[in-house]
Image (tube, rainbow, N blue to C red; front, side, top):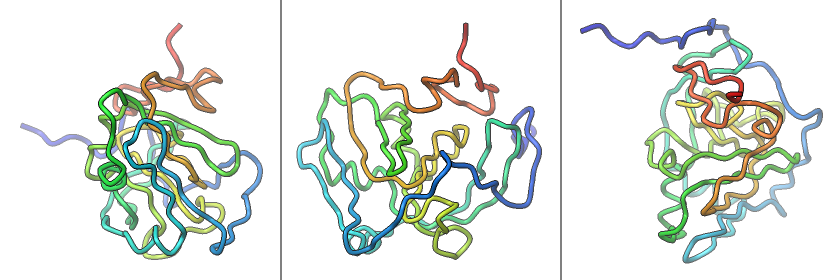
Length: 189
């Protein structure tokens, strides 16, 4: 049995991530910043910057695959597993999707089951360094088994919902599932 190739079909490896955003990097004030976990949860969370970075429970490597066809392999991340925060908030049974909102107006969504993956995390460091504004400082979502448009930068709010809410790129024709191994770049039809 052969092992799975490192690069999904249609991807090429590059040395570092490209700086892609909606045209601006929102300001970050550690004194006023907070992260919310809300929606269909028993106990909504609102964490300050100090509280959030004090919960770091994830250190690992994963790849980032952009829908444009480039991939950066073996990025080291440090942050908080999404599953940890959802467990603390207490997910209600009717919750089926995660909707992510960012400070720059960006949004994305994915099935709640993705949050159970051990490498799905809200990260604050990349390759041992604090995230830069271009990389989504202060917090970026990492969902390694999806194209990078699911890896929202400048994350501010995690909302659990019963019905899927297409995000920024999904409403502009990108595939909602975004599986790089299936080359799910554009929405069917």
